[in-house]
Amino acid sequence: MSEKAEELEESDVKSEVRRESKRVKKVEEYFQWETLKDWEKEMYFDFVKTAKKTWTNNGYDDEEVEKTVLNKISLLRFCIARDFHPEKAFKMWISWVEWRLEYQPHKIKWREVKNSSLNKCFYLCGQNKKGCPLIVICPGATSEVYDIDLMWKLAAYVMEKACRRADRNGTTQMCVIFDRTNMNNGVEKKWLPLYKQLSTLIQDYYPERLHQAYVLHMNWFARVIFQLCKPFIAKKTRNKLIILANQDHLEDHVDTEVYDPRNPHSFKE
Image (cartoon, rainbow, N blue to C red; front, top):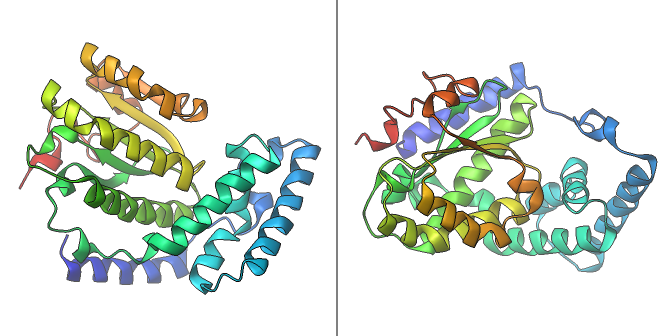
């Protein structure tokens, strides 16, 4: 996508938001709210007060970040991610606040990542049958050398964009297609440190944003790698992984016109 095309898309999005936004505006409208127990809701309300007090007392000064990190639905996600344990939720939240203040992921522009070969490996691609934005990860899409810092920036850029889409359409969550087409042991080993980085990014800085992750072409070596990465993947996240024995099974979740594993457009120049 060119920078001009991105600007046009963002312009179209803004006009579309005004007309058709299904954004969840109240925490009571969040899809998990009704399943919470009374003590969990009470803990959440206390957590909101603590977060606001901490922001003020620490003297943070960034209106854009403040709007995000004190968003009531965002705060609920941290409570859910840490099973409503106050100290654990707060530790996770304050780490996220400091990351957003320092890294400023919402300010990353397409021009900063557009020349990376990793664009073939990590990108947005429509939505699944439930309306959740789709992120495609295809490690085998390029054999070029890449670095972790650039991968982190691209991943944050894509995650931010996916979150905006998910919030607009009211699903609030996204899905991932992990397509291992063209993977070999060499590529797998190169991606091992990136897997750890991605799991940290998704779990710690975008908690409860993942709806499901569909894994294609899981061979024996990939299963070994998965066991190595398993300690870095939270149980909640592992439970969202769907390993598909056959690529045709992806059609149960994603229409082929959105993503066809037999002809993944990530490999097109």
